[in-house]
Image 1 (tube, rainbow, N blue to C red):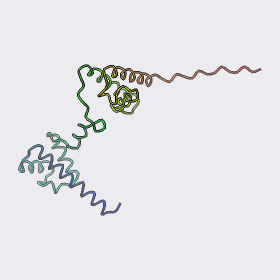
Image 2 (image 1 turned 120 degrees about the vertical axis):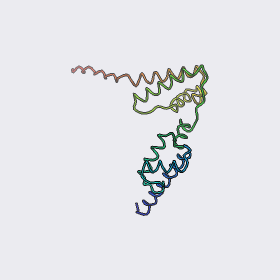
Image 3 (image 1 turned 90 degrees about the vertical axis):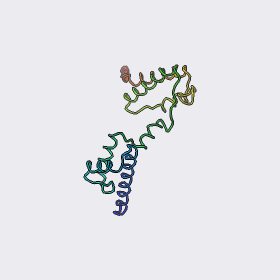
Image 4 (image 1 turned 135 degrees about the vertical axis):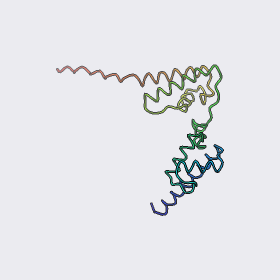
Length: 171
């Protein structure tokens, strides 16, 4: 990597850090005097443009501890599960969906790979119950709980030792 490219990349990170600090300042509603006093207390400098990357991180950590949020992180959490928002389930499905979530969590713990609602969506679609669990009937969710329970039981069952074949009689 050329020195010019590395310098440009560092400058870009520094500018984005300043933008993040300014966004957090606006979120918290800090006026300029309070903001500069906070900067000076955290880093000894009264301007965000004078901060290095380490100092920027310290200021951002402090601002987030005071209630500022990262807008990109908030957007990612709001639209998890493949960028889709999940609807609010009806009362007859709440307990079944809670059981599905518990089984998916346990499957993830047992196998070491996360099992998300997308995995449950694929099971529903493959079995013809619905396109997604959000559209599944209570009977379909009941079947899904059974399928996940059987999968979990199979993953937990230790592999049975192969029976050894009896020796062939020699004639």
